[in-house]
Structures are given as structure tokens and as C-alpha cells.
Amino acid sequence: QHKGFLPLVQQAWLVPTANADPAKNLTTKLKNLIRVLKIWKTNISYLKSFIQRVKSLIYLLETLELCRDLSIEEWNFRNILCGKLVSLLKMQKAY
Image (cartoon, rainbow, N blue to C red; front, side, top):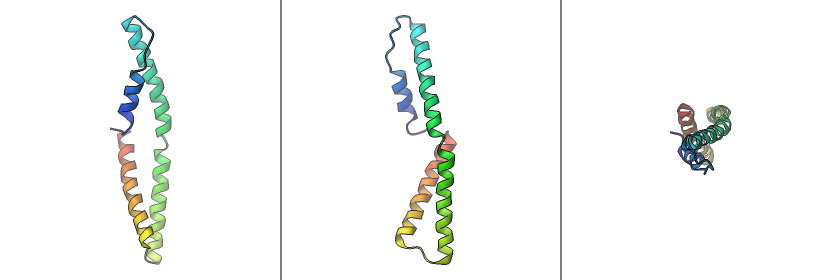
């Protein structure tokens, strides 16, 4: 379900191997896929901290709104952040 997952798997699987034996070819492809997915896992582990930062910014804007009206830019920024938060939470759930 993650946006970049399937293309990553396809790219890793389509790497040519020099094995004539089909069993060794399959083993090589699986090992390559495992290697690529381990790298992907470390790159996507940023989600938790990124979600926390977005939540902090939304909280800051909501606190500011208690003191005064938000400007159009601030209001739009908060809406963008809320949309981004929903997207990140979906990515985290899929992960």
C-alpha cells in the first residue's frame, strides 16, 4: 500500500543475475530483494518523528489561534499540515 513500495520491489527483482541454474537465480533475486527492503525499512523509519513534528506545528498554530485570529497564510498552512498528517498516519498504518 505504500506509494513507492511496489516499484522498489519490481526494480530489485528485475536486476539481472548471472546464474544459469533457476534455483540459484531465484535465491539471488530473493537475497537482493531482502537487501533492498532492509535499506527501505531504515529510510521509512523517519515517520514517527515526522508525525510528531507535524503535530507540534499544528498544536502551535491552534495555540496561536486562541490568542488571535490566524492570517490567511497561517490558516492555509494549518490545513496543509492537517492533510499531511492524515497522509503520514496512513503511511504509518500501512507500514
